[in-house]
Image (cartoon, rainbow, N blue to C red):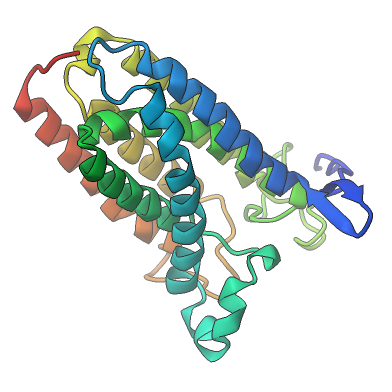
Length: 267
């Protein structure tokens, strides 16, 4: 028993020879909605930095961090030997291949560089960035589901789907699991936290919760997600996604510990 896979064309709109895919629209909507939400969050703090101008000016660096970091992360973590034999294919981003963990490293680099140059408290900036990231995660995972990619392992659960590229057996809709855990649930938790004055006076709590929350969600869902065919399991039954989530969780815990140790600051 399985659910019918929705027949949604991955191409949302065609303009002449140009195909605009749902995945590209998910990225665009994620950046736009995240930007608007970040502008709203700057108004919650009595501290004057980061302000609305800071967020407006930081957006291009965020986009670069996500795209460059995500692509380089995929090259290094998932298909290094393939790209080593054909380096020019690294630039063919339209063929797919992005790593969220790489994107995180790219955005962290952008936060550090921009924050130091503009003399903005790094953890205040990262708290706002982390609070809005789940919007993009939710939209991106929905787009993964529409594309029928990154599907789960074979299951006999009644909510399994027969994916177009996953063979004849029903599989876990792991993209939807991630959309809920990494997207909606994490967005709600962070929204509650960042609206609490006792949290805002301790910059870094929201950042730490995001890093640990994403890592934990990804680690759990990986038990239902089909490992990448060209990688399989890395160590025993541990996938690459789980392996990369471990240092992310530890880094989030370190940020949280540092934040709590610093005590209250100006809200």
